[in-house]
Image (cartoon, helix red, strand yellow):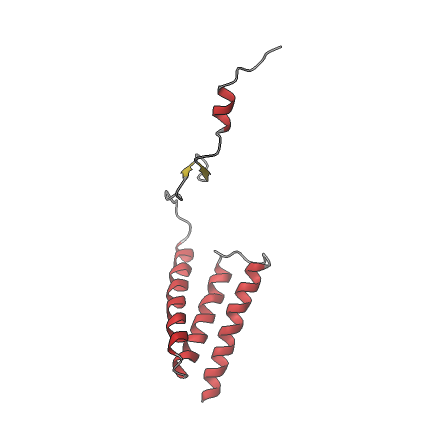
Length: 118
């Protein structure tokens, strides 16, 4: 029966390593469903293995990893939401992207210099 738990652990390890490799090589998006699904599979496999072998630090880490992955996967399934949150030092633009507050604004740079007409 221990073989089942070892197989679960190996599948979990391969899923997490595969997710990391795919994101690192640009094959999948880090906020996409494939990455999140691989993280869930990995966390479950390693959690099952860790509990069976009473490796509590690993089990707790993977339980938290599982909760984070489940929340992220759930958010993906609900679909994109319009976010009004911005990072510190940025402001929302009309396109929904954020810009750096310290970066010069192209419109203000042009307005301070009169344009020459021929």
